[in-house]
Length: 175
Ligand code: S3P
Image 1 (spheres, protein in one colour):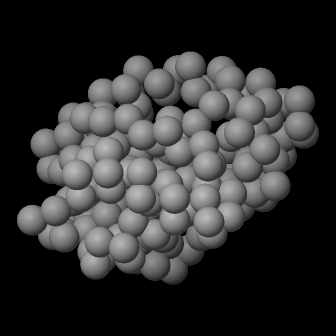
Image 2 (cartoon, rainbow, N blue to C red):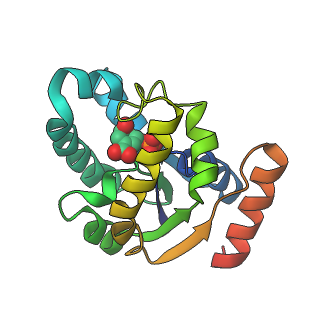
């Protein structure tokens, strides 16, 4: 039974790499944010706006406990998932966790074009976004680094790079 759980900051490529990897390995791909949105018939952005972050974190933990029971899956989590409750220890027990490590400058480039649907950064200008990534990543890295493995996911900018990263991932983890 294979259960790979990808963790890392917003824009690290958890969904992009996770989907491509699952396809390549013939596994089911589960995106935790998407799973939450389907279950609640609401966007993450609306859950944050209507119920607040604390309630989102409770929902996120509950849904994590559902998806982490699935077998033969690649699961991509939200950027904050490992940093609340005992989620990272739980994920480490349930599957093989991999931290997608990406330098701040690359995260900034990716997130500056994809910030609108992300409630934590949607209202920030470029300078604020850059500072926020730097500061929040420093706070979150101790959790991310508890993952079983780390993978450098700085090259996921087009199809060719994604395929090459999937190959590197497979080789690195013998999949
Ligand atoms: C969050 C990241 C988002 C989503 C929510 C909160 C975070 O997921 O779960 O907006 O706290 O970093 P992505 O990492 O997929 O953007």
